[in-house]
Image (cartoon, rainbow, N blue to C red):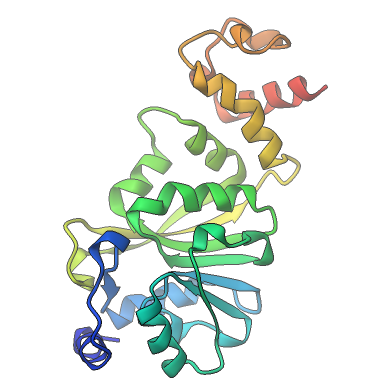
Length: 241
């Protein structure tokens, strides 16, 4: 869908992009097609926030479920894709463990929540997400490690795939975006247990690990932010014994 297609649909259905919901529609068909080629086929797939269906049109419909929170766009999607499984709900209430693949243009205000749900949903094996450019930069090279960035580094492998200029959207946002792919790794780690183990350490990350964990072993005089991924895994595995 190009800009003219988007404007015609919005006018026809008397709809307006909702800034509070981060609604910016992809109008570059080349980018939409490129994103679709990154999605693994023949997998049970969830698309987050399809809007008017800019990306949806290029995804495999037989294995696809879309979740859209805006009732106005639900009617458009049903007309455009009558055989598609469409859910009208808040995606944060959706059980991600129903899906193998997650794809979507993620609104900034729920990016962290979506990423945490992906980390904790062990059924999800891969995905393709579009986020604001600086979000991916902070995930790949964070200035300060947080609980979320650490969980992501330990459970997901991220790769930048496509740079998306702000001009590829309508309405045009104030920042550029990036598409990245992810694949699950370290499946021997239970992400929920890992989160519960690391949470108190990051709550007091300026203190030495021994202040929050009795069996800190070789890392008792370190702070959690000083450890690399391999050391955090060793600390976690030792703490479970």
